[in-house]
Image 1 (cartoon, rainbow, N blue to C red):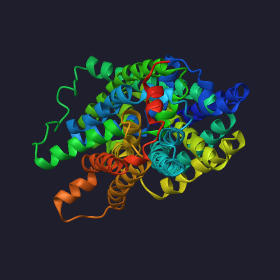
Image 2: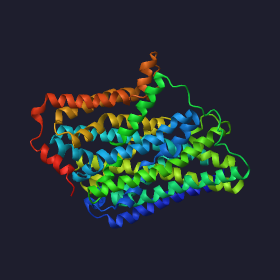
Image 3: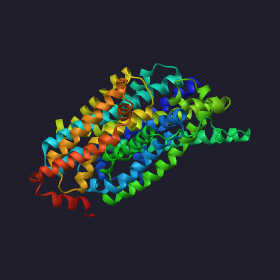
Image 4: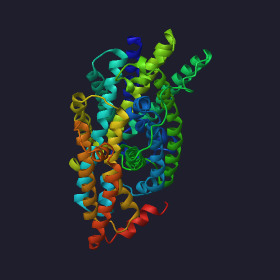
Length: 484
């Protein structure tokens, strides 16, 4: 692997991100520019930006790595990541845009007229954002180490530095341009190497796709059925509550644009996930050559193992560029959403406050990422989806579709979901070994238990406190569902 070429490639992606950020500084003048790009982003442009920030380390590197280690079972990840947007289209996108809110916390306060719900929602959004940033920084560290041989902390630090500078200078309007550019860069960077690798193997009469080795589906058991169902629930419902995705719908001009944006995103994601899936299948045939513990590096290592000479170097540099675009775009989206929430709560939404909060939002996850290693990027992101599905998702779905939701019910449901799923997340992250196999399975994939629990508690407590239903609930729901 040519260290110089990959280093220059990473530097070029970072420089392009910063230059677009500087351009954003020239056109970002108002508070609305910084928070929601003045609600003027068209569907195709917004869909590209959503694809840019949604296709994270778990998508670019982790999906292929999981297919290498788990085979066909791992295909639920790209299916779930994509199908989650169908849920978003059906239940959240257009009504959320019609609310007129800047952040999820703004929506919670608008819908339930409660300062406590707003505060708790803000805390959960920040927790989710930080949990999601950590795998991006771990992925950057892994990429730097494999591609250049430099220490892992260099990659994490570079991502934080570039993201902070681009966000504080340009805000949402600037990041929209950055993320749209980075989506097409990522798609090109993963599609072209796959096509070249398949063409090279085909020219020599080789077809690892036909027999990738040990690729049969394991026997279905009660435990594996539960794990699969729980994963699907986490991915489908978790997408509905991701703060960096939801904030994008506030940038559309109206609800119809938000709906069209979601349809386009579905197509873009379906196209993208074809390629890491093929990388994963190819990786199973070359797993021994990748080396133990390098499953997450399949996309980075495989081209140079298969393609000779300069072709291997070029494709390696290309996928490295795509990987860094993934880390930068997702982290930028998360920092934007967290800065928006934090500045609204602490600095009353000022641009100066936004910039301070962007710095804080980016720096807090850094020591956590440096202190922990990358072990299954897609799996760790899946746990974040489970937490989001158990907390923010019930608030949004019931807040949009159920008139009888109360502030006390919302707090109770989010609290139960956070405690149950948070406990599982901590036990899983700390590697605690549980003797009971059923309990161990629930801890590894908690969503099938925690998501229904959060919904049931939220609804039950709301029924018991029906006197607290806002007198404006009917008018608020009409605003959410009546087209502009």
